[in-house]
Amino acid sequence: MNVLVVGRGGREHSIVMKLAESERIENLYAAPGNGGMSAQAKMIAIDEMDIEGLVRFAKEAAIDLTIIGPEAPLNAGIANRFHEAGLAVFAPTKEAALLEGSKRFAKEIMEKYEIPTAAYETFTDVEEAKVYIEEKGAPIVIKADGLAAGKGVVVAETKEDAFQAVDDMLVSKAFDSAGATIVIEEFLDGKEFSLMAFVHENKVYPMVTARDHKRAFDNDAGPNTGGMGAFAPVPDVTAAHLSFAMENILQKTVNGMIEEGRPFTGILYAGLIMTEGGPKVIEFNTRFGDPETQVVLPLLKNDLLQVFLDVLAGKDPQLTWEDQTCVGVVLASNGYPGAYNKARLIPSFNTPDNEFIVHAGTIRDGEALVSDGGRVLLAGAKDTTLAGASSAVYNVLESASDMSDFFYRKDIGKA
Image (spheres, rainbow, N blue to C red):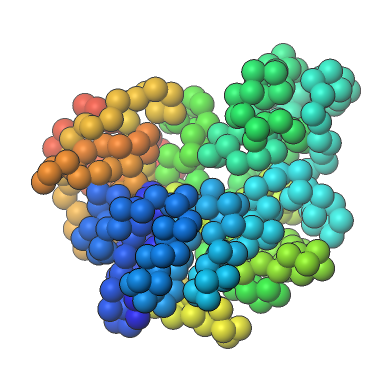
């Protein structure tokens, strides 16, 4: 088969790496891809938002299945366009992707179908938002309604911080139109974890749990990022917690989307928090998480292509998982998530059998690999224990040739 992966980040490289194991794939393409993907796939210089260009390529190259990685083309309707062209795609339609594209819509779905989540209100008026914050107090959470590249959420420890977040979003337009409406919700205290699932309409096939670390620096200090590392599975999430999340969150959500006339096919990602009353939803994504994918897919025993095909055909893919733990640590450009330099030479690493490197913000400059983003790559390792996997991944990072332009957290899998 001929298979196309759309995207350029670490998530997409991880998908490409797993698909490359399949003996059923003759030609594997990535558009536009990144500097590290060329080892497993053919790079196609088409931007992920050039939907017509991607449709043309899929027809010309006789692509049998396309997998969409990032959220922006999903919300722009790429799956709809592929369907119109008679092309097979594993991704939600624009109508279903609104579950991630609008936090307000997601909260309304959860409220209507009694899916456990934080209490909330939505606002477009600055003064009304501030009155609500005065009433509720802090800590409190302020979210831009639309897509903000994982950065549109502020956990405000004080009312003053919350007021500033409201001004940033509604007055200063920090997130452009994505912040024209904001969602303000109660702060939930507890440990967070992610649960991703392969979905086709009312059929849900969950993956192993993962936990990512959002803050830039050790001990969860510093600004929020797109994710500085992750591990899977999460030892403190029990079988009972998983059963509750499946029944009361994932299944209720996909059933509700069918009721709404927006049936969901693709990856449903539930960002959850463990409260005293059980798991509750913080957010939904409608695609593989990043960096969670980079530690979940290495544990999957199945042929990933066959999983996609089975799910699309309405068959149970019979997911099986390695009895191991996977830890991934992100190498980021100095200054991230603020301003940072690009075109810095990527270090070389020693990666024994159970260790690996996933590329994210990298490009090729002739024969050299150089940085092209804030999150540059992820070093990963598998082991029978969380401590063992964590130790192994830090051995990889410590083997680097030159780290002067980059930084990473030293406590992933330990915090």
